[in-house]
Amino acid sequence: MANSDNQVQQPGTEGGMPPESLLQYGGMAGEPDNMQEQALDETERKRRKDQEELTDEEKRLMHTKRIPDSIASVKRVLEETVGLGRSFDVVLREMVFGKQRTGIFYLNGLVKDSVLTEVLARMSYLSEDEVDSRTLTMFMEKYIPHIQVEKVETMTDTINKVLAGGTAVFIENETAAIVIDAKSFPVRSSEEPSLERVVRGSRDGFVETLLTNVTLVRRRLRDPRLKLEMMQVGERTKTDVCVAYINDIADQKLVESIRDKIRKLETDGLPLAEKQLEEALLDKKWNPYPVVRYSERPDVISSHLLEGHVALFVDTSPSVIILPSTFFHLVQHAEEYRQTPFIGTYLRWVRYFGIFSSLFLLPLWFLMVAHPEFKPAGMGWLGPQESGHLPLLVQFVIAEVGIDLMRMAAVHTPTPLATAMGLIAAILIGDIAIKTGVFVPEVILYLSVATIGIFATPSYELGLANRVTRLILLIVTAAFSVPGLVVGTTLWVLLLAFQRSFNSPFLWPFIPFNAKALYNIIVRAPFSQEKSRLSLTKPNDSSRQPT
Image 1: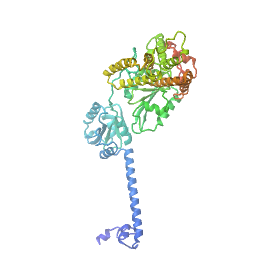
Image 2: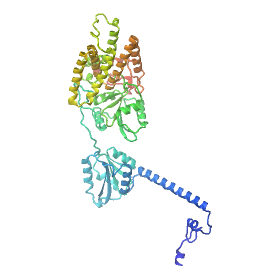
Image 3: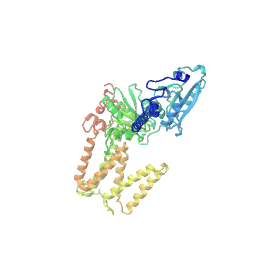
Image 4: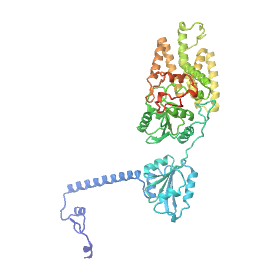
């Protein structure tokens, strides 16, 4: 009687027995057909299975979006997402401060031990009386003695910031985390770039850490209007990319165009940093000629920013991209501006002569040798004094490939041995090749002069492109004589003329013609005469100095 009195009956049940039990054991509704029972059971099992799978997926998404309020749950999420316990550098240090349980999440090797030690030392003195319901706010405002501290609401953002070098502090019963910017990346000291050396001038250069690089520019441009916008590229690498420009000088349409293209990039990442970013932004495919300028010198980047250009800094790379760039930007060197205007102009002309020689010296000499009637009066001596065992064109091709092999060997040879290897290759191999009759002396002479012109080209990428162009011009000259050289040169000029660097003509100010700008390209003008900025970048403020 007691049991029956306490038993609560539900509508449609007998003695509190659920409807499912009635179907199983038989009841007032009667025993259903076996086929119908199996169909109902199968449908119910499928529905419950789908519901369980959906719930697991929702839980997983919820864990990645919000921060659990218990350290144990945080630990499980980190085990699933970043491999806590499997990856040796992923650390979650559980500690108790006062009466509050906390977890400190960081990557070993990416944080400053001194900063964490100072923070932990300050928090270790907390007593139970000093910890109340406002634990997270108190930790941020009073107990974490560090400048860069922020509150993060989601687990995804927290993990991303820790992967970038931050340190996260999780607190029991709190659904937010504190992220301390205590990153410390492996970094080399700033030194002069090997490709942009100068006799006079600064000896500092960019390194592989983005923050150090923008600091070197900030030191030279103490202008509040210098803007440094940080963006991330890559689903997996999340590479930091900084867009630098001076707000009241740079063309805002250019800045917005670059910004939009970076935002729209969809890729796994940029492990090769600036080169992959350049190819993704400009999409030039098989074009051998660069349409951006690279520089590792802070003074060069600062000068371009003052002209209205936009600079792109990519983390892990010491090379900074300058946009837009022209052909004549690629042949400028900082040494020209470290000397007097007269000497700077002379150095510029010598460099132009070297670049011209690197392109046209060999095709012109080959043309005069193949057609002696083209030799100017008094230059009958021009040509090989003796013949070799191989045709001249074959000699040039072999010598070109040999120089490229020596260059690559010098790059991959340890520094103490590279000089000796270069001397052996250049002197012994060249001398033996001439004595055995494989090469004639003039081939080695003129190819050496052309190669020196390549080395005198400030842009390494432009030098490589000119090397390929020279070889093509040499081949078409040998095949088609004067028409080959003329047509090849014309196609080369057209190729450059149709190039554009973010909608800027690559051959500006030659095509389209701008007399004032072309004068500044030919002559290194005195600083006092540089009253206005060049119109290439369409600067908002075109005045450099009061007129």
